[in-house]
Image (cartoon, rainbow, N blue to C red; front, side):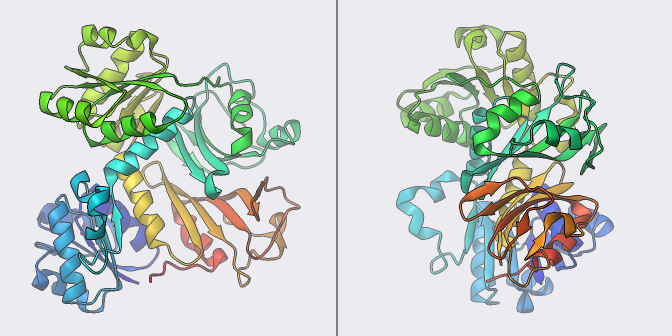
Length: 458
C-alpha cells in the first residue's frame, strides 16, 4: 500500500515506522527539513519538504497513485485542507485527519466532518482519545496502563510489581496451575527497560512492569493476585482545565456513581470557560503546583489526582506534590516518552502518552479487513492486536499448542460468540473467533500473515 503521511513529528514518525516496517510504500511530508531528514535517516521511507496542503507538494509525494493519506500536522486547518486537496485533485480514497480543536467536533457541527463536505473519512481527536485513556486509568487505579478489548469484555492491564507481590519468583507455568480458573494471561514483561514476551518458565521479579490480558469479570482477582488493592474512586482532582481536563470532568459528571471532581486551572479565562461548561464540578483558578491551593482542594482526602496541563514538567511536579500531600494515586500526562523511566522513582502511579494513544487510534483505522483493534505498547515496542479469524487463516481449526507463533507473540484471549475464554493449549481456534495477540513490533508482519489480514483500505 502507498501511504502519504503529512507531519513528521512524533505521531507521524511513529505511524511511518509502523507502516514502513510492514513493507508499505511510505512518504513523509513536513515543512521542517530537519524532521524529514531524521525520518529518512532512521526509517525506510521517502520524504518531501513543503506544505502538505499545496497540490504540487502532494504531487511530489506521489499523491496521483496513493492509496491513503494521513494528515497529522500541528495545524487542524492544514490537515482539513490537505484532505480536501487529496480528494478533489488526486482522488485519494482513504483520508484520516487529526483534529485537535473541539469546536470543530461539537455535536451541532458534526455534519462538517464527512466525506461530502471536507472529504475526511476518519477524524482522530487526541484530546478525546487522551480523556478516554485517563478515564480508563481512573477505572483501574492499581494499574499504570489499561485498554479495553473484545467489546469491553476483556482488559489489558499494566501492573508495576513491588516487593510485597505474593507471586514473585514463581514460574508463569506454575501460576497458571495455581489459578487455573483465572481468566488472565501475562503477555508482556518490561525488565530493566527491556520489553519481552515471557516464556512459561519465566519468573516475575520485583520492579517488573507486566502486561496482563484479563477477563473483565476477573479484574479485581487478577489485581489482588499481583499484590494490588482495588478501591473505588470517589474524589478526583484534575489539574488542567483545557480540552482534556474538561472532557474528563464532563465524563465523570455523566456517570451514575457521582464522583466528586474538582478542577484547578491556572488561566482565568480557561477556568471560567470550564466552570460555564460544567454543572457539579468545582473549578479553582490557580497554580496546581501551589501546595496551599492543593490543600484547599483537599488533595490529602482525594482518591486520585490527574495532572493534564500542556506542560510535562508541571504534570510531573504536580503528581509528586500530590503524592507528598497524601493522595494515594497520581496520574500524569507526559508527551515526552523519554520521561517515562522517571515515573517509578518519582512514585507516580500511571502516565498517559498522548502520542501513543493517537498512534493506536490511527492504527485501528488503518488496519482494515478483520483487525478490530490495535493498541500500541510502550514506545511502539509492541502491539496488542484484536482480530477475527478468517476461514482461510492458518489459525483456523487448530489447537493453540499446535500453532507455530513467533517467539515474541502470545495469545491473550479468545472470544467465541460473546464468551471470552482463557487461551489454554487445548483450546481450538475456529473461523469467526476473535483472538487477542500480544506481538513485539518485529513480529507484527508475521501475525498479520497468520491472520491473513494485510493492511488494507476501503
